[in-house]
Length: 182
Image 1 (spheres, rainbow, N blue to C red):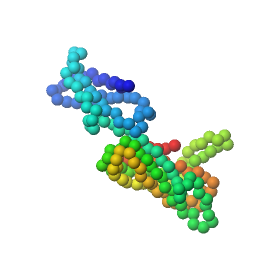
Image 2: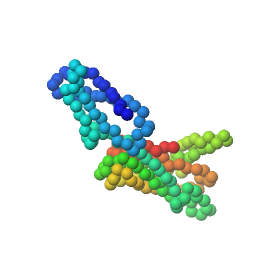
Image 3: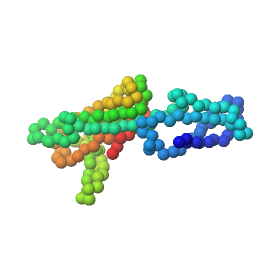
């Protein structure tokens, strides 16, 4: 369905700009692109129209992130009495990036808490020796849809029976464009 926004203004000069703000719930737009079309009217008559579905300057890409964290291809691991250095590989799948641009995925591992009633909550970022467990990967999107691996390597000696969950943020330059944090 169409989403309509309107701005009424008085032109101060022959040339200029005006902002048109669209406010809406974008929760259903993961992996989709929206394009703004404009119609300029004066006295209820159309004087100009811009309606180009391929105009990248008028487009906003909503990126979808999905992740899958594994240790040696499994969701579970057993700690030994010896070397407990572990690498968790988080496969970050993305949809609707702009090919040719450089992106960075920055991840943190969070401890999952489950109370007596079975309610799951975020126990905060996992720390080892007082330092947060983080990882990142920088890549250039070859296609709009693809994946990248983020590897967290740390000493898991103190994890015991804990569950950790990877949270990921996707950046294009300094701009945060997508988050997966569940």
